[in-house]
Length: 309
Ligand code: GLN
Image 1: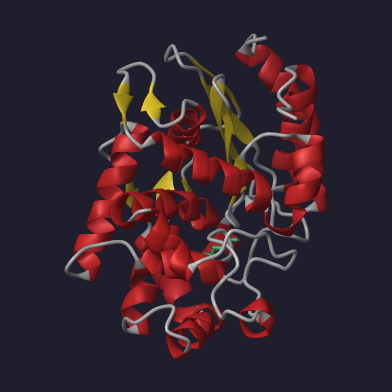
Image 2: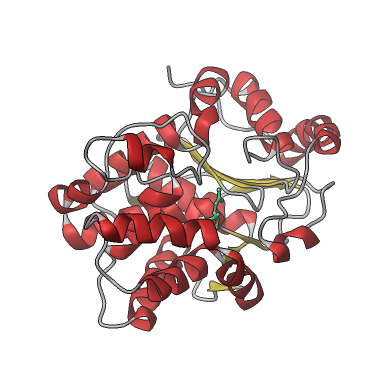
């Protein structure tokens, strides 16, 4: 069943919004503290180009961990599956996204998957280009193509704020450099990674990216293939197994769609062959997922039979 109307969506947003009070805005990246805890918005983008939405969908958010799906797609396109999985694994961790513990306890010292910070840093390392600027420029071009929005850029304030405080991510990089997972200068990689996390867009842009993944890499309106089908498939599989951090199992049961969240409170969803979803709700639960965003997806999943399992 298609989603009927923005009015219907609005009702669900009002119900889910109550949960923002139980969450907390991320504060370990100082610039993210400014976000409004009470906000909740959603856009749903259909293959015929129609969109329904509720809340302040013009509000821009930084991608944070959602960018991990996009860098994975680019690295897979750049280097191929075999190269990428030499440096990063396939398995969920059950640990928080910024945990270092499995890097040490795992026999082969490579990150377990591309959706945790260590894995994402290893993936960003594989994005091709002669300089940090060129690599970041290629990522931006790719994201502009996915959204169909040439105005997509990044927040310097959020990037700098994370770059200056990212001690834990630096330690993940140094650990991986010691073990040969990465072999570039850490400060450059951190520059690229913090910029990728600070790429900004609104819920509609996010929903449009979700739609491309939902349609196996094809933009349905133009029928242009933006990603090889196998790349879209791998990304969606990781979104199911690891996309909501160490809450991915519960999310698969309660909602049952490929989705990826970020600590800014964004969630990108891809409902296979049906639509793309972009959500923003800055208040997070203890695992770092948008608390009201999760409730909203749970309600949507029941209302529109989204669960693919
Ligand atoms: N930029 C954030 C970090 O590396 C992304 C994490 C997230 O969204 N979970 O800590």
